[in-house]
Image 1 (cartoon, rainbow, N blue to C red):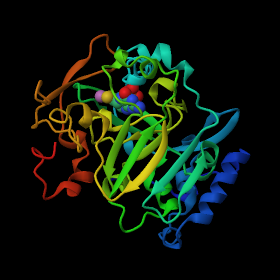
Image 2 (cartoon, rainbow, N blue to C red; image 1 turned 180 degrees about the horizontal axis):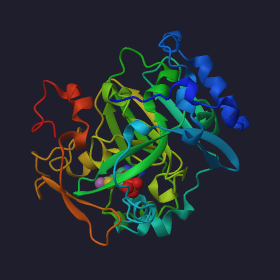
Image 3 (cartoon, rainbow, N blue to C red; image 1 turned 90 degrees about the vertical axis):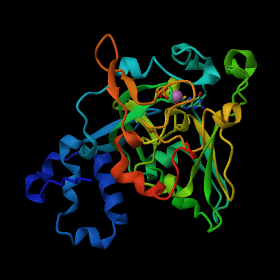
Length: 328
Ligand SMILES: Nc1nc2c(c(=O)[nH]1)N[C@H]1C(S)=C(S)[C@@H](COP(=O)(O)O)O[C@H]1N2
Ligand SMILES: [Mo]
């Protein structure tokens, strides 16, 4: 992947005045491996003023950098990405989450990491926001229903958080679990969402989870995540179908064995564990060769689906000796 750093002499130090940004820089500098500095690029490059901006959570500000290595031509408008959603805890219609997810209680928020780890953790969202290096990345997003979007997420590489818990050598899979709140419409009335068993559960192989493209998002479009998009913390695995991107995560468990994810449990012949975007492997009821891109226009544009959603150069090696038809 192309990495662009501004030369240190292109940065005017005195243009960076904000205290929070300054603190964050110092924190990151402290954790930088020495080798990085010896590349001669200097840290300043990443922190060009125009690339730093802030996310506001409970009246506190957290700075993030815009990672320009993931620029894409056309973004899906925020108005579409935040009103056309799948979040079945709130119902099956695309606008149910927008209207109903207001009741989601996102503060205080704790995340538990347990199972096959040396250091089980319970960490608050606030602590996560303070300690993880936040950045904006623009990713393609492809739902198994054959619609797609391009979304600027704000988040951090999941591997950075997972390392804090020190997975043991026995940890082969990562299991994620969504908050289950008694007053969620489809928890109260299972009929609303076809008797889907909640909490919603997803899983990844540990090498997939550790891949640098796999992020936990806390924001999108420069602001914190709207509830309907999985506030306050959701998974984004851009080379997989949308249903792997589990929302509102409260628990992460490392496991020796492969878990059964929610959609596998409901219809294992239609939704597999891997769920890698693949134009050549059709869903039993529809083709995956193309998708409806939801962009600016009134109507979605029909575009060709790309293998691994266009991230093949980065992730194909994870599946080198696998039959993608069998492991769909
Ligand atoms: N907890 C939970 N997470 C979930 C879902 C859900 O119903 N519940 N739906 C999934 C599906 S099918 C998709 S396509 C994406 C949609 O994310 P978005 O609404 O932010 O576009 O969330 C995924 N994560
Ligand atoms: Mo989806």
